[in-house]
Length: 301
Length: 301
Image 1 (tube, rainbow over the protein chains, first blue to last red):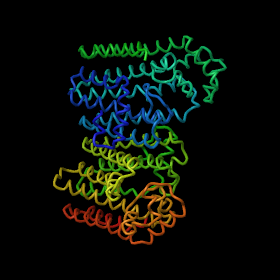
Image 2: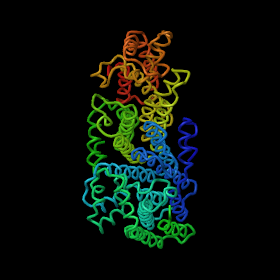
Image 3: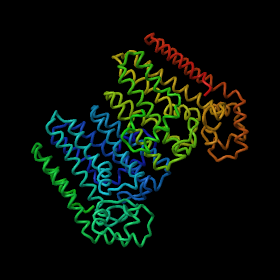
Image 4: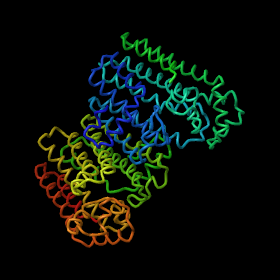
């Protein structure tokens, strides 16, 4: 991943270094590597795919942070907090381009198709989120949004790894769906941690989603059992909100059963993911994919 | 091209419609279609490639206009003049994604490789332009910049069309270089028209490049014969500049031989393009590529 900026502009190299140094969990490339390992993919092409996926993810984060005006990501300053919007847009574009080049290096048109389709799903999801603020079902909107934002890329990781493996038509769908299920769970837990996490642990301020008017699963559950909460209505309506009421609402949600219900819902996705794994080759990698699925709901950051 | 937004967000559909309605010359897809026609490419895949190239070009324009803060493009308002930066970034990303999907539909890994490589060249060129303002050779910088910005995409149009044609190793390089030569000439003439064109004809304000501190070939020629012009130095140094001196400088460049010298330099590229065509199959399409090359230096907008 670091090598993709070789021979390019020094500021770009520094920006990529900055982004990659923050680490992050690298869970998407790990999912690709384990899936391909389980199915017998060619290691060299698989590693290229894994790097391509992490770069695609990184590129979307760069543009996302610019759009949201985020100042921290993974506990370190975002590019847009230090650079101009113009430089940030271009750095994101450059990382997209390099991700696409790595994807092309897998030498598979099908991988390219999955790749560009996923980018299209992610961006369409963000645009929908930006414009459709008056939709009627929070729950439907939420699940569509987290599919586009997160689960689509997990699905890409597993299905593209399967494409690089010896033909295995009968397992392809299970593998793709395993990616979908853990991706949905991963985002739900991320949204729970936005309420329950400490700033230093999650690397971003607490209840940031709510502050930005973003309705996630804990808020939806809380709303279902407290439809008349006066602090909540303005947030649901998309109005800008005063700090005190927001702090009070955050505490109410944190202390309610909305958190447990959300974790339980994530657990449902993980249960389905584990069932899907049963049809797949019983290798060390499958065991690791099981452990990973269980870790996703248990993680504290 | 219009169909790529089907089934997506209505605002996105409207934005794409707006962008495509402005028309433009569509010269890049025409170059791809003629090249592929000349070499016997499969028509369906060739048309897909041509649409992919025009969309890639459109996506880079959307992000460019945002970066430059341009309000007009092709005589109609830019997206960023009417939308938020966030929506503009995402619309550009969406068009990139759909361009990549169309490129993948050509079913050629080599086309995908050329595609992502070109995007990487274009973006790296813009980043270099943003950061390296103190470079020593204006001429070297200029030629690198117009290659990255324009000629790389003409090169993509011709070489990707050749990839979709029956194997023709011996003509591949001539075809690629034809794309390079006309692309370089195309941008030089664009830069000349920025000085000589009327606002309504070029669809953007006159001498906009100079106003933005962008040094193009006419300014370089003018500087070579008038190294002591006091109005010019602050522009070369990248300082913000007062309107009166800028207007005086623009008039001086317009009336100097820098314009003719620049057109002549474009003519040199076109001459080499025409020579390269001589090695290629003598078809109707080759004739059209000849006419196109000659049109590029003659055009008034």
